[in-house]
Amino acid sequence: MAEDDLTAHRTAPAPAKASAAVGIGGRRLTIEEVAAIAFGHAGVALNDDAAWRAQIERGAQFLRARLAAGATVYGVNTGYGDACVVGVPPELVEALPLQLTRYHGCGMGRLLDAAETRAVIAARLNSLAYGYSGVRMVLLERLADLINFDILPRIPAEGSVGASGDLTPLSYVAAALVGEREVEFGARVRPAAEVWAELARVPLQLAPKEGLALMNGTAVMTGLACLAFMRAAQLTRLAARLTALSTVALDGRAAHFDAMIFEVKPHAGQAQAAAWIREDLAGREDTSGQRLQDRYSIRCAPHVIGVAQDALSWVRRDVENELNSANDNPLIDVDGERVLHGGNFYGGHIAFAMDALKTAVANLADLMDRQFALIVDDKFNNGLPRNLSGASAARLPISHGFKAVQISSSAWTAEALKLTMPASVFSRSTEAHNQDKVSMGTIAARDCLRVLELTEQVAAAHTLAAVQAARLRLSVTPGASLTAPLAQFVEQVARLSAFVGDDRPLEHDLRLLTRHIADGALVGACPPAWAGAKAEQ
Image 1: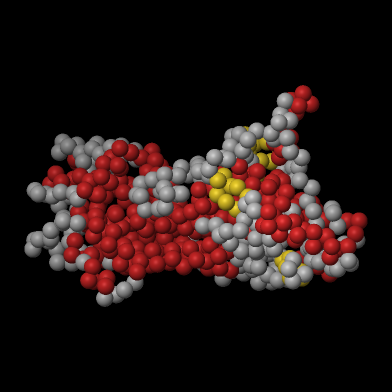
Image 2: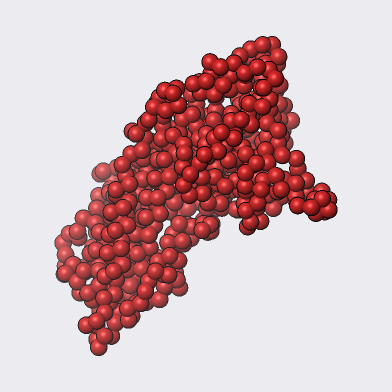
């Protein structure tokens, strides 16, 4: 950028998201708030309480005092990892943090998308804001700038074993703060230093331990876990609605969801799933002509959905505890005048939560795929056309309706089920056997997001088929009707995808509906901070 261009930008613009802000510092952050930040509905505002700000600065000052007194502090005047036995001479202490960010610039794989990147930054900022990391306020302010000005480090997804934290991916956040590597800003990929100049800011010079504090934590796995939680919550509600719609499409029995059945087996999530289905079927009357017991994928749907719903309760607990923790090393106890060397960077709770959640979500994929298989098959769908074809009688011999979509759904389900192998048990001894037991939490979180993506595709296919089947049921069964919530849902889906009469490609419809499902816009099951959010592609 030319010098006269720089001069034109000496006055920094106001943050893009200053009007809606999530408070950081002195309070617990929720998953929903991380989602609001991630999807661009809110920026962040650092606590303006003087005592909190003073506590942050005291940590950095205490660390400086310890160094001046000749104390040895890991990663401040020692090498990193197995090199903790190597002393760093005083004249190199200031250079050490930048070295850490540089040699960890070896990430690979896809880049985290915009929402994932914002979630990661929010998670790291919130952890450092607890005041146990020995960083300065200016570091927190620059992390807040990344969010509020939407400066997005380009973070490769692969390269973390989840202890000693998310070192390699978080090095891209640290590098952005010091003006190195590239960021996305204003829908363009640009050098980080150029963006800071445009915003009238000088790239940060990391103080002792600040490189380690930025990188030696669980922010990547935790940020991704927050987004995974929100998408899983949406899918549990959608699976219940599709069960109700499939019950109507198959001319099945509402009695399978009677409240007493679930009172005598009192799993809260199972009861909640049954209640959702009952609400969607309210007023439906069973008849003596119906099959006495519907097949398991309908009758036992609350028992499947309920596992995911119950899992979300403890997954929330563990993810939010990790989100609201000081998870780097060493920690600075200013009041006790101690430096504590430990292992809070270990991501075991996130790893186990994501391993469990992806299994529960894959079971939702399997459930929806089995329901889809029933409604598309004229041997089981109680009088609906083969493959749910809506073609005219003249065109019916060459029409195949949802046949190929069901095959694709089966493929997506199989892939989701294959990916349920737990990542957390695949610990590897690495880094000269210093990191000899690691969490694999970031791999678990990435796997969970992939299972969610596949399951959302299955849900989109099942949604299109169930809506088609319900509309066909209204035409072939005298007196058939839809309850108000199901009629509204069918109308909502019909606005996105028209009735399939003669065969047509459905890829566009599937992609559009999958985005609506991932966004949380199809079924109003999620809290306001998330509902209606637009996932960035």
